[in-house]
Image 1 (cartoon, rainbow, N blue to C red):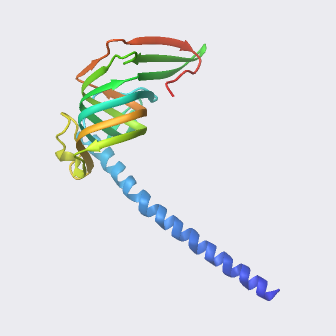
Image 2 (tube, one colour):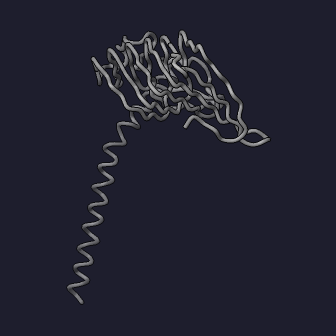
Image 3 (cartoon, one colour):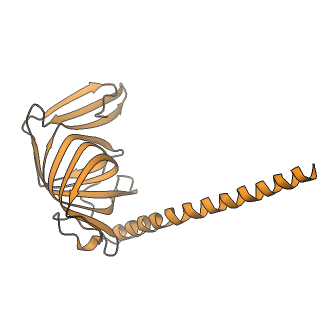
Length: 212
């Protein structure tokens, strides 16, 4: 019996030690992310990062079958909503791109229930073209092929996409070309110098009918 009690105590000590190790590992991973977020929030408060407009209260969904771009960049950033809340995002930009199978959806909660607003383009052989597009991304999933990559470049020195830079000293990345397939994004905002959709269609559909 005494041997069993000692074994159980030893197991408890080992598990506690393992738990401390796991928490230490978690802290090592999580702390830099917190520091970067704090830096971005501080930079925005000081006017280093300019918000182009106040975002709405929720994200929208954006999907494409394929996107081929020339010149891309990414950097940490923030957006603000009408309540003054500062929301961290990944600012992802493409200088020039062609996309097919584009779908954008917004879910609206109304007194009549949920309503989905869907915009589509680039279907049936048509192509959507964009120039100097920047997406404030919350969540992203895609298959990507990149060339001429520079990861870890100071975000304050990015020059692949006009107007897309982050605070000096923070992480950034850019490259020469990018090809994305089966793109699934949740975003807070999209800005572009030119957005051309030859077959734009908009539908207002009762219920939940988002792009994905």
